[in-house]
Amino acid sequence: MSRPLVAATRGDLDAALAPARAQGRSLALVPTMGALHEGHLALVARARELADVVVVSVFVNPTQFGAGEDLDRYPRTWDADLAALAGAGVDVVFHPAVSEMYPDGPEARGVTVDAGPLGGELEGAVRPTHFRGVLTIVTKLLGLTRPDVAVFGEKDYQQLVLIRQATRTLCMPVHVVGCPTIREDDGLALSSRNRYLTADERRRALALSRALRAGADAGAGGADAVLDAAHTVLEETGDLDVDYLTLRSPELGELVAGSEARLLVAARLGSTRLIDNIAVRLGAGEDR
Ligand code: PAF
Image 1 (cartoon, rainbow, N blue to C red):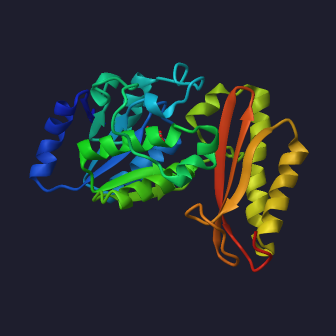
Image 2: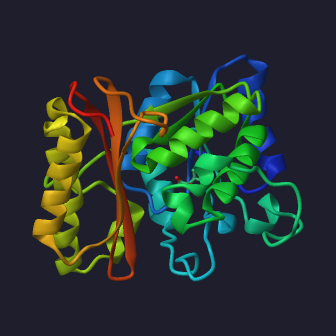
């Protein structure tokens, strides 16, 4: 296991990547906020398949947290993260300070990346500034790294769709690759926030993946059947504060009957907010 090069500044990152650029080796970026789990390591494994050199950024981005959200308590597990990335064969880890990414401070009014209409829906309806923060930091990371490929998890599905939209709209020369969600054996989607859950909340959280599974299994019956099946599971569990359960096209637009779709759910358990989603193949039933 060779230790990755750790770059803390933009200059360090440039220096770490210079030999690869000079040799024309392809580059993959996996942006993360640390607190790494198997889901992140699956992204790294995919990145290694796709490019010669893998860069992982570990940066808890303040601008994607709204007032009263969990920025201060977001898990920071740098030593464990670095050990995991070394074990996964990562070449370069970019671990900048906030001042490196936001020289004028994260609160400074300046140029940001607007997430457009979809940025105000679903997660954006509950977290109005979230996707602006995500797209702004991802744009900076892509600009600094200039990767051929950037790898993101489907767990944050709306984020993935918006990053695809942003790179396309802003003409960024990067191929955005999405990777399937990694789950515990009982179906719970891996998330850095799962560690906030009490044992009882974790048990109740299983309703999310069960509802999605039930919905996907009902796909042949059309959109109404999908939503009914998923709602039934959520209602049976009770005690869940559901923000949304919705069925959309894979690009999160209008549904097309008899086509691919995405079922998405968000719920609060105590002070923790969880999201999950699943692909659904819709039959010819009623469109919604
Ligand atoms: O998915 C995440 O961990 C973050 O939103 C990302 C993409 C690293 C941007 O901070």
